[in-house]
Image 1 (cartoon, rainbow, N blue to C red):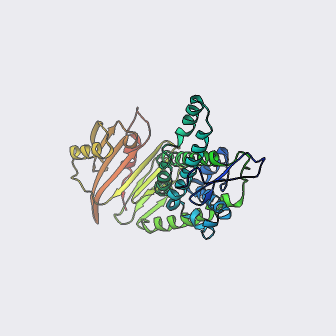
Image 2 (image 1 turned 90 degrees about the vertical axis):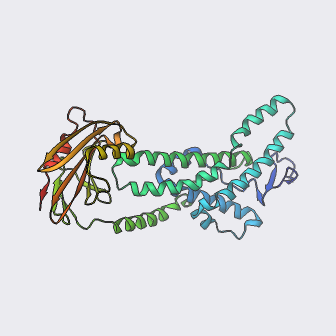
Length: 355
């Protein structure tokens, strides 16, 4: 690591000193605004940092002989793998800057003020780990876009906050070491470098997801047919699309927050017993079963439960025993319907028909 002696003497009249760490000058970075980082992070999620780091590495390459042979493009595309290197450079430059500032402090009050200013950078390396984790979280988000909105809203917000806070912290460090008169970066095509990569990523995600498509499922209006097990069920909301929310899992939204789902399970891993299923619900959803009931729906036995958790508010398991296949259908209601909690689920179970 370079120390405070690695300072370049500037011409007289230039009050800002230039210093070097790890072969990088402190003025070799792009100054971005928090507003720009926030808006573009919100719009492009994990793909905005592609352009952000491309611009930063491009500036480093342009201004430092030691980095003339690097590829800013690939360092931008694979930014999680270069996160530690990037933060290491910044950390070493911050150390030099801190030493320079402290050497100019004339009293304890000034030193205490500087301590407070630099305190935010004490755990600076955590930024590199956050950068590396964000794409992993977002891969989950991409696939969560195929399930009801209430499931992925929280994940999307968490990803945006993580990206914004991480880049904002990096930019704070950059702003600290940059010369005071360093110009702000302009909005350029480089900021949108992640868009084509986003397109490629989405295409790959859709292709992968389509490989798991259920070819035995037919949807017509609000009726869903299982052509393999030879039955159909009808969702309660007319003029509302049925969406595939996962393998064998289909949902229908009434509003953005209220939806009802069915999982078409031909084989079940636990005994079809009310008490056994209640224990499985409590274990899987970390929920407390508040009530349970047993009924017959078109001569099929069904168990229904209410819990204290939104993600398993009301659930019903219905067993069917007809040729050519027998199995279980799981119905879940994510509506806060306290007056008639099983109304929609019972309507769906009673709609069961052999085809």
